[in-house]
Image 1 (cartoon, rainbow, N blue to C red):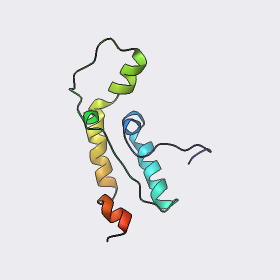
Image 2: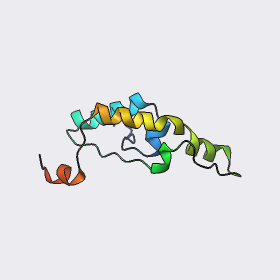
Image 3: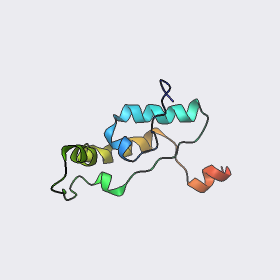
Length: 96
C-alpha cells in the first residue's frame, strides 16, 4: 500500500509494464513492512519477445500486450537474484 492505494506487486503484466525498481520495492515492502511472503507469477508469453503479433487490435491493446517483452526475461533474472525464493507448500506450511 502506497499513497492509500494498493499496488499490484505479484507479477503478470504489471511486472512487465512497470519499472523493475518499482516492482522490487513493492515486493520488499511486502516482505519487510507487512512481514509476509510475496507471491509472484508471470505468463510464459511475457518472456517471448518473438511471439507472433496479432493484427487488427487497437493501440491500447498493443501497448498493454507488447510493451517491454524484450526486457521481461532480464527483469525476471534480476528478480530471482534479488530475493530468496521457495516452493509454495513450504511458504504456506512454514517448512524451513
